[in-house]
View 1 (tube, rainbow, N blue to C red):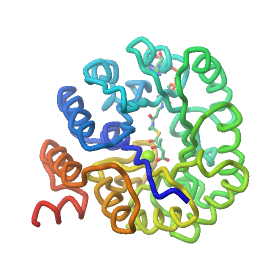
View 2 (view 1 turned 135 degrees about the vertical axis):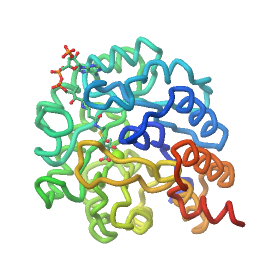
View 3 (view 1 turned 30 degrees about the vertical axis):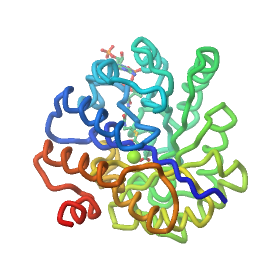
Length: 297
Ligand code: HMG
Ligand code: MG
């Protein structure tokens, strides 16, 4: 199998959506500028969700308009509904991501809608996106556990992933929203989804609450996945997922990948420097172990 892994950098979105302190719009734009120089090919820039639900990203339009976008980099944004799609299109967005979950309770808490209701909300977005030439990614949250209902059946993950794919999402990101998964379980979940959908259309998205994210990623790489979501400096978490902590740090994922002989096209020292810059802006140490080690080296 191919040894190239595409990192989907979600730091500017998943990393900052749960930040307690305000982050200046200019800093968000600067973060994306720095990330754009590291070799990343996909940088999730922001979210056009309700500013009442996620005030941290209320400046989505300003951030997106402020990015000096490069033609070789995709800058997807989250949209929860057609209103979000309209706002995104108004500033020229050309790739969006829709999001739902394998757990009914989590999805209601996160988007005020059941799973099937959310899928119905996405249908017109997918139709319009097709006509507009906009690419659509799909997220399934709580694939390895839910903060409200506990265990999540793999069959529920498969059903929702399949629905998003059938609707026209080019890639489905499988999210361990609260970071409760462990490697064998993660691999078995991916295996079950890949029995129904092409592996090339799947991505994995791990939060590192219990320190399992890198082990989970390694197990999923062995299963064949070649797209990994992560956030520089390990920032982030979902405000509507009780107990969710940061995403796995992009620097740590790139260190792992290069160490096992896989290619990413990413300049690790440059990425680590960006992670440290972000952490300094947020007034803390980087959440990436590789980022710390490279600073000391
Ligand atoms: P709702 O309150 O049911 O929405 O929220 P509504 O349609 O009834 O509208 C209520 C108000 O919100 C109205 O304003 C709308 O205009 C406004 P009002 O008339 O009261 O002044 N509104 C909007 N404004 C701007 N942009 C919009 C928008 N939509 C409505 N797009 C809604 C439903 C889905 C909007 C809300 O629940 C929401 O925004 N949720 C987003 C929550 C979120 O962003 N969570 C984090 C992202 S998911 C995640 O992190 C997981 C992931 O990383 C993967 C993983 O880790 O598993 C992706
Ligand atoms: Mg997430």
